[in-house]
Length: 189
View 1 (cartoon, rainbow, N blue to C red):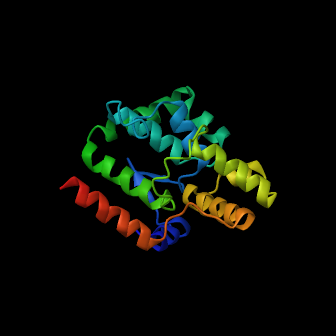
View 2: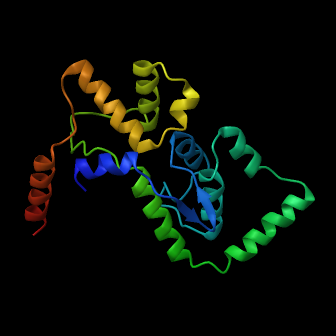
C-alpha cells in the first residue's frame, strides 16, 4: 500500500461488523483495551478462539472506557441471557471468516504511514502512547478527543506535526518504499 493509499484509508472508513456487532473506527482506546486483555488479535503468538473475537467485538463496538467496562462486567440476569443468546448465535459463525473481517477492519483503520526500516531508532514506548502525547501537545485537543480518533488518522497528524517542528520525516516516499520492497525481494531469491 502506498502512503497515498494509507492516508486515504486513514481518513475514509467504511462500516465493519464482527459477530454481527457494528464496530467503531479502531482508535487508541480500543488498542489500549485489546492490549490490556492480551488479545490474540494483537499478540499473534497466542492461539485465537471465538471468545477472543467476542471480547474484541465488545471492545471495538464501544466509544469510551466507561462503555467498555460496562460491556465487559457481569450484568443483570436479563443481560446475561441476552449475552448468552449472542454467544450461542456466534458458535454458528465461521471463525476464519470472522478473523478475515477483523483483518479487513484493522487494515482499514490502521493504515499507518510507511516509516521504513530505521534501525537506528529504538522504540521504548508503545507507538500509541507517542501518538496520544503528540496530538495533545500540538493541538491542545483533549485526551478524550485524541483517544477516540481513528488510529491511522492519529499517526498521520502526529507525523505531520513532527515534520512541521523538525523539517524531517521518517515516512518513506512511495519510491523509497517500492525500492525497499524490490531489494527485499532480490535478497529473498
